Image (cartoon, rainbow, N blue to C red):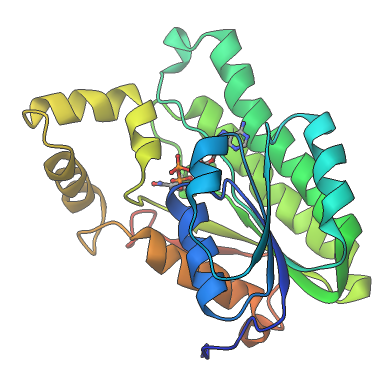
Length: 254
Ligand code: NAD
């Protein structure tokens, strides 16, 4: 389905590029020939530490800050693809969720998706493609996912609306909806911190136990697997797919 030169000569924007799924997408696309990567993240050190073989622009800033997008837009030029992936989590139940935390998650995940999508849609070439990182938490209710789940439900709807608005220029917009992926984002949620404690501080054992319990396939995805699935949605192999969400959750949401 994908060849080693699938993204040869392509110019690609990736947000949340410094860690986890975003960093895996950066490596995957660079290895398959991308010639210019515009990488953004709130963590300047981790962004600077990415070791890459192609031309990169690295712009540190808050995905939810309109001024950051003025800076990024000045460097975008014409884009072939965009992976709009920056996000944070929170696992508090509604009765314990501070309004400030609700706003922080909605702002980063949904305002950030809107601002990055608007910038990407303005810069993208005819025939280009965009993937937003949503989550199965935007489709399925679980305790403790009010802020995160609402933000990701919004991302799924943004992808659908954008797909219709961009279609006249043959630009495709899709979402990836992972279930669990082993990345540092889990450490932001109180229930995972409790689970790690229950497993005597063994983070991997906690993740494996959660995956075994929650997913019919018995495991979570790796960031590299999600990156390959994002690349599929970006690529011509998905030429007739737009406005959809690719669920990659080991069967969790069935
Ligand atoms: P991660 O924490 O490893 O990566 C998130 C990246 O986003 C980090 O580099 C972080 O610095 C950056 N970021 C956070 N806040 C930002 C901000 N305000 N402005 C700019 N950058 C910011 O986590 P991840 O799992 O790789 O998360 C990537 C995306 O995948 C997120 O949107 C997340 O919601 C989604 N997701 C993750 C999982 C999972 O289980 N890991 C499941 C479903 C969806």
